[in-house]
Image 1 (tube, rainbow, N blue to C red):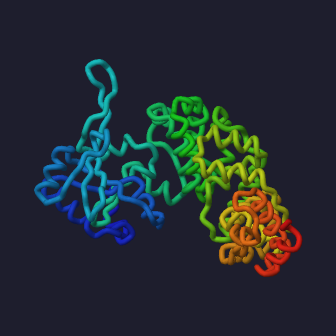
Image 2: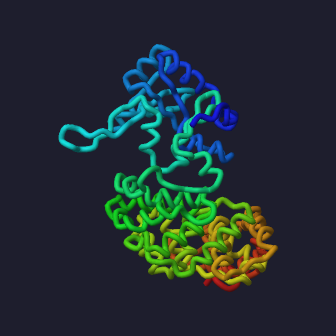
Image 3: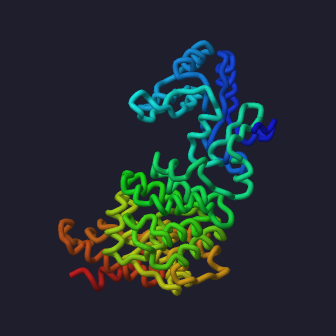
Length: 411
């Protein structure tokens, strides 16, 4: 179904140079359309998306069309159906329409097509099978626009067949439900995901992890995660969480405080691990070195509500562990304890804007007292002085600290 001039193209055309590419394809007798996420997100008023493009020209024809119009092209990895077009110092990927055919051996293979409806039928969800041209005409072959407006996330055609062609589509279903879904999930789609969940075992663990992390930061992640864990979709990969309500608390707190959601914080709140378990989870998910360090330290370092709400203690915490760690630990602590206060936003702003004290004593100051620079005593003296300075709420001056060292710590 075509919807004439249905889409406000100002929501898509953040780069006016793309009209050049559209003209190049049309001058060569072809059509070029935005597709999938680009159209879907623009229809929902979202921002920050990239360009997904499709054409009814073959890859060779697209290269020829671009060369005739002065546009450079490059191959895109192993994607035989996709050409990279260099436009405004960026590479835009343009995919040729495809269709499934049965070869002489009875095997199903993918080949190029010039039929937009057939290409749409190969896509996973109705909301991802919507196309738009440069004039804002929207081409909707599977009622994706209506589904998007109603918050219905469902597979195109037979859900089981769609999933069997790519088991990652199980998690994609839950991800898009977490982003766009309203009310109960589509029963046929959900039933197929539950029935075929063991197929996820055949997908690379890193791919499953990355898709799961995208679900964690989605707007309505709580609803999707409840379905995932109640139906043991990821039982082979992760245990059922300790307290999913804490996850919802964190999502609510972050939204109120207008803070960017973090998959790592949300993962931690889901499981609330001790240090040993945190390390096991980090290893199982193959987190980066920095992610693992934060994840394990969140488990090791305890913070009480008193630490959060008392300004002096909060500054000491910032000094020891840094602003980012302090912010994250405050959010985690409040979520787990179901501790909500109107002051929290102000506290987080204060953490962000805090002036971190700088310890005024250096090793050379101790050396000037005649202490051997190679002696471990210098480190011990600095440690004692720093703790004394922290205990004074950072009020002791450099002279006062040096006097204390000279009188009490220097033999």
